[in-house]
Length: 109
Image (cartoon, rainbow, N blue to C red; front, side, top):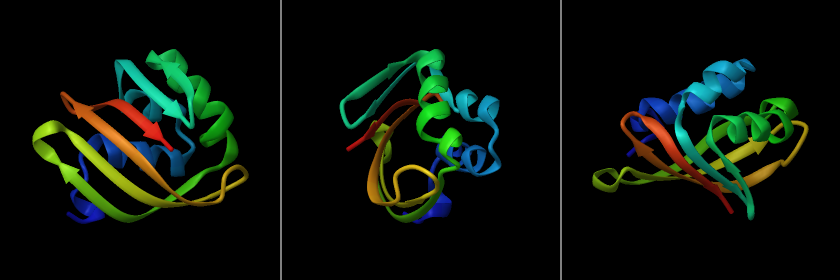
């Protein structure tokens, strides 16, 4: 699987981040989304929006996909990304669960 084969919701996560479009970013997640960033937990659109403002678009994050591993039947997608911006800079994993065309879970560890 290549970066071009990732689900639309994950592409929206990345593209909205790069565009600085919070509404588009939040819309990529399910209403009951769960986000875990190194143990910090966020729930639903309100939580995703909060994380986005403090750790993502709020830090002008930029993601470059280095690799993708998928279990499409389970809706699981593990990306290794290069992150740059005014926050975390480095290589790290993003572990997504996609349900009904949107991101149901994102774990960053």
